[in-house]
Length: 313
Image (tube, rainbow, N blue to C red; front, side):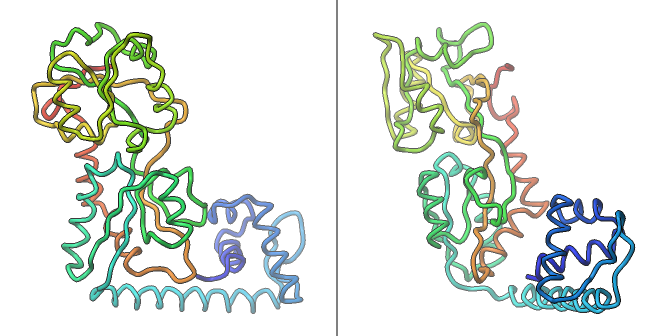
């Protein structure tokens, strides 16, 4: 909330060094220097004593720095007051989800509703494109989606990189003796989700969409239909990592990790930049990224032989 240029000034005062101040602000040194110069032009005074190294502030610069520190202190007080007011949140929080993230969404929503039972959640499963459009148009307060599509101004938290697994019936004739590659799938009968379900990334859709001639293929938007076909041993499938845990505890299937695709994207929690920050979105982000909730998520996201038969690469 405090001006970015004033943040540069405060960091320079604390670090006493341009490069260290830039690192503290997560910007380049030229960007930090340019920001301070712009502030000097806006105020019409010299703030920093000129030299090859940082030599301190001018008399006017000390005045500007005092105001900057005061503003920072007031902002912290404001955030604390707003934080205290969040104890009584109510309203509706709109969440956009990728289809492949649906299996673990309840980890975050349950933790949130336990803390704020008066808040209603509207959870919408959408394509990456629709989520991005919804964020830009203000239709979503928070999203779990690909991070590489988001503006740098958005607040985000990385959860995992998208991975895919080959699924077969245990002991299936399609289970290779060696590590499996994407090209191997073109000659195997697959039962998979259609592209419009947005379960797979676009590069995976393109790869799965070109099987060898006379290789049977079934597409279904129903998980039970997919598992029913794979369970016959006549079909195999490809699933994103989170979806695998819909069959956790079953000894009927075996899975093998597929090589990570070149375009594999990071998936995380995103709170879009807005003119007025949503207290509900901020509360969801804080709870979803709290140590207890993230520990629960990591336990879900790390496959083990106790919950699923996974062969090594």
